[in-house]
Length: 224
Image (cartoon, one colour):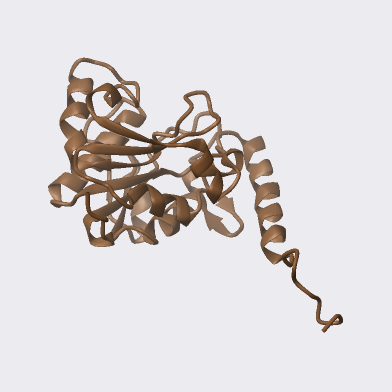
């Protein structure tokens, strides 16, 4: 298996959710002066040769300047967005896709880079988490060879976003490895409701403070 180059990867912001719990389209919610959708795009830009958006409200997302497509098969939830992302990558004859949902604003670039390092067409690289599923399929890398399995799941009416996993080679990134990129609870924090946005503001401030604080061996200017 050879290392994957940026030019072989399509970065896809998944922004197709209905945001019913949030009350408005959360992709455009502001966090630290940047929309959630733009945050996701910036993260993906570090590892993908090109970044695009899958969103059903194409007209609203178009002014952001990134290519936008709606779900190829509407009304089937997150699996529809993932299907569209992998199909888009296959159409462009790339090796695969790295997807990131807009409601996970704290996924670090180092993690998405690790997910795409050795992506082959027939595999899925998915990070483990402490969430209900134990993994995060909407922050993951998929080879274009996963497309037939996704389409087969849709054809049989199975709309679970992980419905096709038994039919592809899933490489699960261990939680211990994920943790080298940060606290998994923060990395995969979801902004689903307005109260989650308030917590996201707090986390952003905490992360900023941590980055600004000196390391244990650092000396202040006065000490020098």
